[in-house]
Image (cartoon, rainbow, N blue to C red; front, top):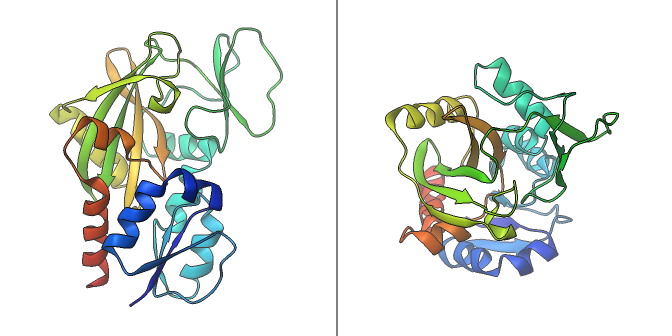
Length: 241
């Protein structure tokens, strides 16, 4: 059985560590997003659900599935979905100020700004009420239905706490109620390897975002968990390799 690992060329260069983990542990060949050739299975690391759909329509197993990729990479749709299913979010289509303005398909804290003057809603952006604890959030990594790690991120200088933007990070131990919230979310979607981000508001976790092509740098920096090898082991089990 031979699979393909799909990255854009830019992301493959930036994520060489991850590429090496996948190709060492699995029978996969690295290809870019233009590839439409044969494959027995697909690891889609592009955030493009259409690639997953293409292979799923051929009956080929894709990690993550297209349904997850589609909702995780459209913040507006993701917020509406979570709200419809009883998961607490901070209000969107928010007309007050200050407000957090986010590009619908942005990642890594890029294209996220805090606006302090009312403005007409701009297409392809989400306008959301800010939390009462800016500069602090929580990421939880999940493989299948299992919580693997959770790390608290904080910034003293920015309302965005992203590690790649210079925020600090430390291991966080979820309470039973917080674990229940994570499981509530992961039971709503079919996923293989994702990150779920939470904000802190009124002393509780509030869903913020779901990461389809979630990175692993913080897990390797702050824990002894080899999360990408665990993900490869999960893929082997799913495929009976």
